[in-house]
Length: 410
Image (cartoon, rainbow, N blue to C red; front, side, top):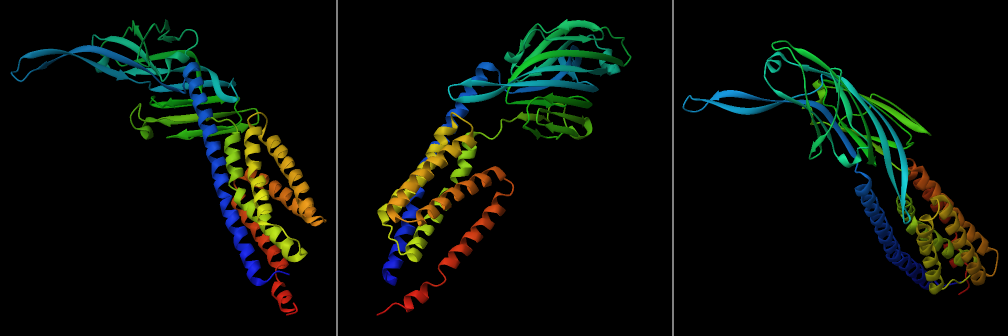
């Protein structure tokens, strides 16, 4: 049996070696970040070519007319002014169909959407009395996403947008109104849009109702308002917002959106898995020390180093495999390769059945790590309980070390 001094030295060396394993783990973490940046860059490139995330704002009527004021000398002067009228009631119905575009080894979520907008404008008496030019404006964040014609009707008259400025569609209207009387002007509009990753809406109406349906099973609702109604299914979702001018502030100050998330990417899962890397290495090293102490077997520091590096390489295997297959399959393949390699190595070192116990511990650690990664919400609680159990096991196997030292012959 080793002396106390040699035992303490061995424990210190193994502890230092475990800390040294943080260096290759950090290198793999940097590699994951780099691959994630490449994926983000690819997603941005595809979005630039397809169409960016769409923000729908409008429609609105813009009245342009002349008013006469007096200058500082009291002389009349004529100036042009504009005034915007937003819908008194706005209803938006959006149907979103998603698809994945592939480039190299990366996938990007894009979509087609069919928008149906309807509602009415209330033109006040003072504005109806003006001899004004009237135009309809519809603001979108990326006009390249429009598919086909953007058509609409105002007061029963059909139109289509024929001009644009910046991100605004524009059409001059021949709007008949009776001077001195408030007018109610109904409208309808249909648009087909392309976009990527998310769709946003600005509640510009006095009352704005937005209903969105889509085939994405993992949507996320964000912004200044959350849906008043929502349903998320395996085959898609539906959500409804009802926003009043009382709580939205200015017509174009608020925004809410549906984010069409992909399921957790392989890089996110690889990062979560890597967080348990040092824990698995420490547990395996502790198990090796226990085997040395209880089973009277010798494992050299060089052999601990080889074991630690094989445990680190597991995460590089998971990352590389997950770019070509599902993360679960990649994890299982990497875990199988690592445990088989360690089985052969442990058998060569220990030359008895304790090799199988160590490999069983490694396999169990990988299984537990995968379960914790998938749990997310209860990962911390479950991980803490598992560590407590492991500590209790270590305490059990090391409880009689002092007695063994005392019974040794001098």
